[in-house]
Length: 232
Image (cartoon, rainbow, N blue to C red):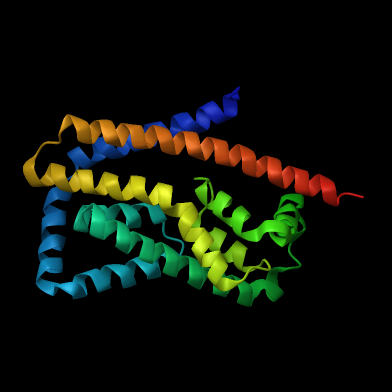
């Protein structure tokens, strides 16, 4: 499989961004912040988890980047609990954005982006196999979370199948980000990480990039085919 120069640049940027995040974690006093927040969460008991869920859900709906929210789940709660909370935030944020998108569709359907051929191709694909298209698009790392939720809300999708497909599609990215947060938690806890933890994290990054690349290619091909089939 040949990789274009544009894709090479994009994947290079992703790798550099992840590497930069790791370096940043060791430079900033996040350990002290985490300890303060962790202490507050411990004192709050289960309310701490509820506060994270509520705050994370609100932030995910108001155009805040979703990655730091998911990362913080692993940083604050570790992998098992953090992963469950992250999925809860992703599901709730997707559902709220989806419902809001459906409400505002009548006000924006006349805008130019709604007439874009890719938009129309996705609309056509959703009619044939909406759940699959949603899951595939969720696996691509290039869609802004909140905008994607509003966009999906404009399509003829049922609420529950959409939410399930969204969560399934976001699982790979959530696993990577929550695990990265749990690594930071371990590093701040005892000051060092085992070699196998780094190896597993590196493998996870590689698998995520590979899957994202393949899914992006297949999704674009499916949308292109759908667009061509709709042409007279």
